[in-house]
Image 1 (cartoon, rainbow, N blue to C red):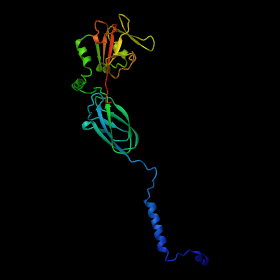
Image 2: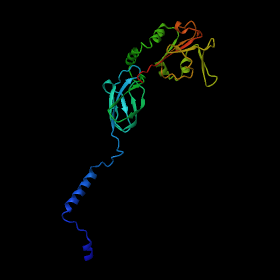
Image 3: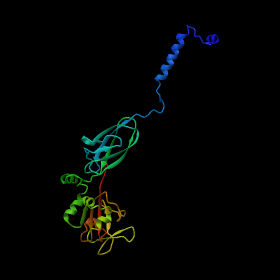
Image 4: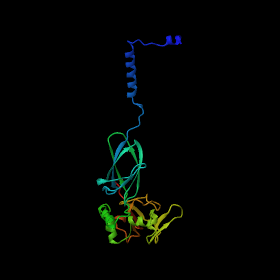
Amino acid sequence: MSLLRRSRLRIPARLAPVLCSGFGLAVLAVAATPARAQGQDPQPSSLRLVIVDDETGEPIEGAVVKIKGRKDQASGAGGRVVIDSLPLGRTWADIGAIGYQLRREALMIQAGPMAQRTLGLSFTGDKLPDVVVEARQEKLYPRYADFHRRSQQGAGFYITWRDIKEKGYARLSDAVRTVRGVEVRCPTSDCIIQMSRSACLPRVWVDGRMSDYFGANTPIGDIYGIEVYRGAAEMPAEFAGNGMCGAIVIWTKNRPYR
């Protein structure tokens, strides 16, 4: 026991304050250092979305933004909605509104000032009063004025975007096979459209220009209207040319705000 007592380390009284002081500073320094100085979790960020009609550019108030694990948010005045505390990286959002097709969009969230994105929704007219649908269509008349002017004159056969939607036409052949005097033949998986009387192939025009890219199997989900002229007697002068057999005139939807 006496040997153990003699082996204990004794600190001179004059050094004790210095050593204790230094030990205390070391503890404070460790405590003040962040536990993850490197590789800290990134701070969340915010994003402002502006929801608009992808054809007219008009803001859509009341569009609902759904992000998994978060409360749904609706766009307010000007189609704007601010989403706070988003993790950095890619986030998927579903955006929908009455009368518009649901859109699923990947949002890239980055650190820094709040970013803004404009997202356009495709109009369907579902669950909207006819007066609202017609009012919107009038705003688009300038682009499709020739289509509406010829449809009122009565020559030819006309298929509107509403016909396409209501009757569930998926391809060009689905829509024109309902026209008397037009025949759709499918000897293989690649169908052709021809005029019944002459068995000749009509010219296809897209947005005012002749096109070789629209065939019978072409999807028509983005079509505003279709004009079908079954021979020279119906053919407007602007589409005559060397296509006296007939013409199919297609007007696509313009989506500058998509």
